[in-house]
Length: 112
Image (cartoon, rainbow, N blue to C red):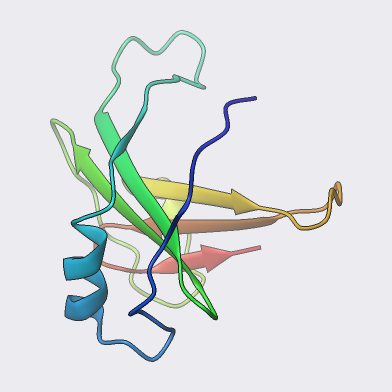
């Protein structure tokens, strides 16, 4: 399993405006995702991300470049996995259970 260093953003909280968070996340080092999880799929988009935490939240910013983008699902908890999307998995205290967050490029979230 690959581990990542997570930066602390002292000046950001869950109440910060999105443009403020985006600005601060621009100073966090980007990490590359380069694993293709779909067997038999030669295509791989370019994906980098930055991850940080504040006193009361976690921030993840994705940088994605791909040939074609699909963003058709806009309702809360819609099937964003049918669109171009990113995932974030997190678990706590070595628990085998985890949370899965999926987001498409128009900001629709599917959380489970």
